[in-house]
Image 1 (cartoon, rainbow, N blue to C red):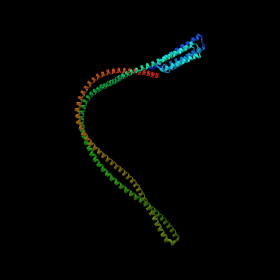
Image 2 (spheres, rainbow, N blue to C red):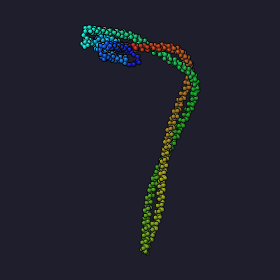
Image 3 (cartoon, one colour):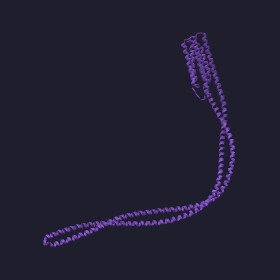
Image 4 (cartoon, rainbow, N blue to C red):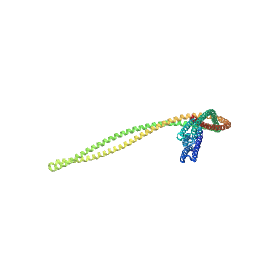
Length: 523
């Protein structure tokens, strides 16, 4: 597995231990395969069986090697390597009567010392002794190792393995104790160094921050002094022009005083005009009220005339009805007279007197008819004149109503004019009062302007003196700024030292953490 990042101390230590264990397993595996190939050349065993055993040795060795190259910093690699070597170890020991193969576990136990893991070392040693004893029993009872020399060899090798395992366990314990003591001593030195460096870092950081603050403050003061100097120069120029402006303002204030006096006179005249106009409006409003009253009386009279004319028209209608009845009676009388004349003519001489009477009655009937016709014509004209009079009265009533409405509008306008004149009078009075106050204020302004003119001359002189002092301070601030800049450069170097210390301290902390983890794991 390729990894471009920088390895920590623990990872580098684990990688070195894994590399040593991988090479040990690989070298022993290759050596065992050569031994079996030598056995093939001697012709003592079947060729196929030997190749199978060699393959069973090569496969775990290849797995161990490939696992290392896949992840050389893996903590689990030692377990994989020990498992693979146990397979190789047992295949070799159980496939040959040469009991000396049991000694090949010793280099692996020595390689495990680099892990500083006492528990791992003890477990591996005990496992090696158990396997060695079992392999010895297997050689005696299964492989048929019956000679005294071979049994003595098995006993000697088992004894050697027990002694070597015990020695490796003791060596591992001593290494772990030594490592623990070294870590404790290193921790004490690191603690002292860390306390000392923390104090130095604290002081350096404080000095650096103070230097930067002072440097920034001096720069701000220098800039502010320059701005103040420039501002005071501008103030000097401005004050010179201000003095001239104040003098001109004093002259203009005098002219304003005259204008204010004229304004007061005009406001008083406007108040008088408003008062007289208000009186005229009141008079006009009273006249309009009288006109409204008289117009309402005329309207009442016209209504009464209209009522009488309406009654007259009704009476003429009744008279026409009566005349119609008279005309009917006259027509019937004329008809009766005609009938009487006819009957008198039939009667002859006896009815002559009656005929004369009938003729007189007929003539009276004709006269009555003529008179009623004349009366009807007169009454018809009278009725028509009454209708025309009523229509004219209605028209007059409408005109009078419009006139009354217009008069009321005029009255309302007079009321609005009166209210406006009242407000105008109040505003004119307020303007007059405020103008008087303005005149008094302007008088005070004239006095203050004269005082301000003399004060401005004094300020102009003080501004020139302040400008000179700011120029001197600017030169002093430049000198102080140069000293602070040199101090800031030294503080920058100190920052570099502090950063380097932090980097080294972090690296040492990582190493200490790795060693502590390894020591805890071993314990």
